[in-house]
Image 1 (cartoon, rainbow, N blue to C red):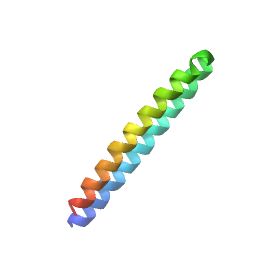
Image 2: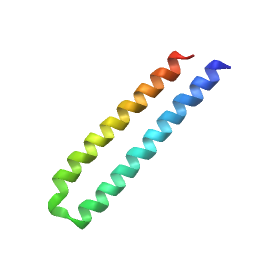
Image 3: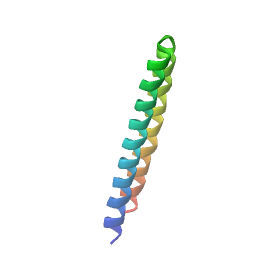
Image 4: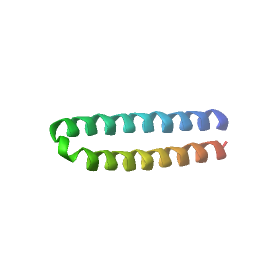
Length: 68
């Protein structure tokens, strides 16, 4: 039972990270389309945000698998 819950938790973490990174990418593209001169700053912020989300997702997956 615990292994199943760990797998569900890991799956939810990955799905949440995918949705979050997708949303950040979408919003960044819209912002760059509106203000092309700010593209470099927006892209930098987007990459940093995506990396932080990816780190939290990896941490959540590791915790879920350790709890197994």
